Picture 1 (cartoon, one colour):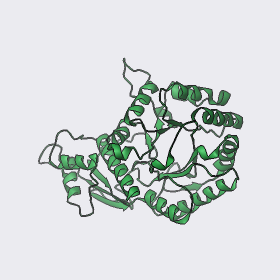
Picture 2 (cartoon, one colour):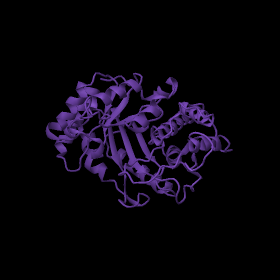
Picture 3 (tube, one colour):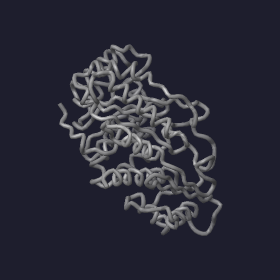
Picture 4 (cartoon, one colour):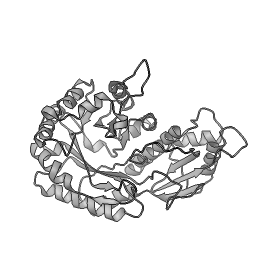
Length: 373
């Protein structure tokens, strides 16, 4: 049985294992990282035509173990087919209680993995239940991740709430577990649209009440999660071509839930990343610097047409951020990168991936600071 002190962990960001998101996590200082229990959505590794043509997932797992600094992490699989390979697809095969997934987890030389119970509405429920029993038997602590909001395919700001996962998955899984108190239950809201905080808060509270009402006892922790960071910032309520300031609904959701319920919660979000992946759209990236504050996001953008010195767009956006009265450094690696960009330091990345890592690092650092104050 895994020895696991859940009280040490305050924050569980959901991170896709892209280079940008892993870099933002890796650059957390040791004290901060020791209080974070990330949920990694395993993707294929970076493909190399000769050295790694299949994007071997074990390379990605080795990276997760490295960046985790011997701290526990939750392991899930990416659901987007574009980021899968043959290995990942095979783990979704339900036969014999998702045997391929079980064998893969068993083959990883790491004692700190908390496995996610894979769920599929088309699967035989007996295979899901067998998977749950076997993972609990081997790993002790398991994670159950369920949804609660289905966005519209054309507009993620609208959609519908659903609680089918409670009857379809939570009840049979809880029935299968020897000890429900060794299960982390992630309630994943996905994208939280502007102005919809109360609806999400009310519905997630109802879901937690219903799960407790099943009569199997309380899970180790409820982990409500989501992100209000939009797919595109320079539109609607979020801001314009040069500047934006908009509320961080995922943080306000957690504050509401902790104030209105007595449940044991761990804070979770998508580390300031929009939760959904979309096919690439042909447009020019506008250099942008983001800074997550306590309960707001700030951004400054400058187009490449701005001239004057090398990397003008990012450097000018960084300068504008440092001069913004609402910006406050939390002393993170990401904040240091903003200062370096303002000083025209050539070591700072000059593309979207670098600045996603910077934003995520600031966000995760500040969450832990806020949760420990």
